[in-house]
Length: 230
Length: 291
Image (cartoon, rainbow over all chains, first blue to last red; front, side, top):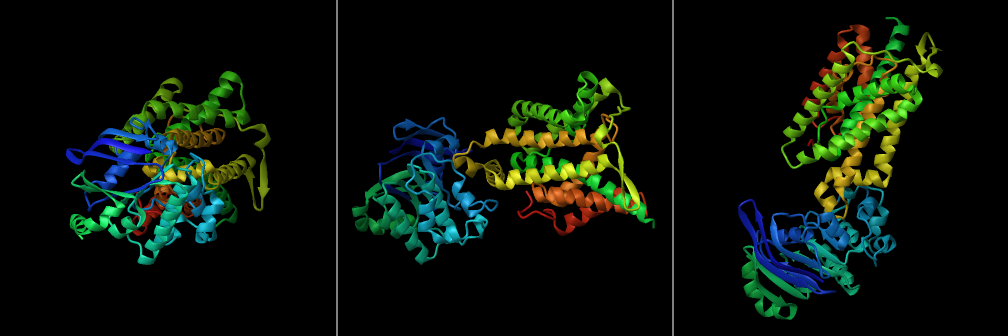
């Protein structure tokens, strides 16, 4: 479904990614794990077309995305949930949801979003940033679901969330997965990654050092935690 | 103090405020989306007035059609400038935008001066609005009342466009976070041209409105634009409500100041700007941080 081949990226002179390759099959939830600075967010930005100083190819459903601008990639079916949630203060909650054009058949029309997150309906006329952190996270994910993206990229959605909200987030992602949504998740929280994902790519210093199926991860937990610096 | 004089000054203040509001509104939406401070805005206002003048002289097209045609024509010119020149500078230091728009202002002023001289040309008040009405103790030209009402209408329409339509939603999103808005599937660059055209059109519209009451002259905009920048600073750069409110507020305050001493008229504007910069540097109506 989503495939990256030999992705290399730079910030000025500094190399950020070195020959990163991965694949997310249809309906899979894959995580990129690794510590801060390993290149996880840069990988997502390369996929999304936000980081231009890169080489290598990114394909979505067999279509080469190289040379497409970010808005064209979104229209090709990529949903993006940025690490700061990307909620607009100058847009209401409802406008935040409706901003992206509908790019594919959505299983999550506005009514379903409002049913799943009643607080968004209640506050739909309020500015997006008046929501709590957890509610903003839900809004950001709901926005990607509503637009009908076929693959959703999530950049550390658990960051800064209280444990009870992390559990809610897990339920949301598992529900989206049951709906057949394909997801690529950047995560530092290994427990969370294990609870939702099918496979994991471990990134260190800008490159993929190992891949694990979710079933294997328990056996490698110590090694992984050492890598994550926890 | 003469009550009649005070009320005349109040109306004059509202008229001046109407021009500040239209000009700073255009500056605000252009800055909001393009992050360009358009130093050529005063020259665009002047072009609007000259467009109305030329339509009348060359084609015998009167005030009412000119009120629509001149802003559209000047806005199309804006589209060309955005596509051919401004667009190349977005990735660079903002200083390049300043230089370009400032250079354009000088170029446009001098081009008009070369063709029409410095003196300025008269433009007749439309017949329908040439009377005066008596308002309490004074009589006041109908045309000026029309300018106040019409500008208010345009400001409200622009507010509606920005706050209540899909175009406005995209503009607000792109203003706040351009890159994220792209990642959410919106071709921000396409909207940038439209926003620039709207901002330019508003300035040209102000120019057409000014033609019957002020001399149509090459430097008519350069005097006004300095005060308009002060208005924008007071209202908050990029704030739409701020631009309009500060425009009318300052127009009235400056004119009432002139009741006490004519020299106060401009002093008040810049004193207020200094106070705002000290107390609320992002502007009176800015909800966000200063850019």
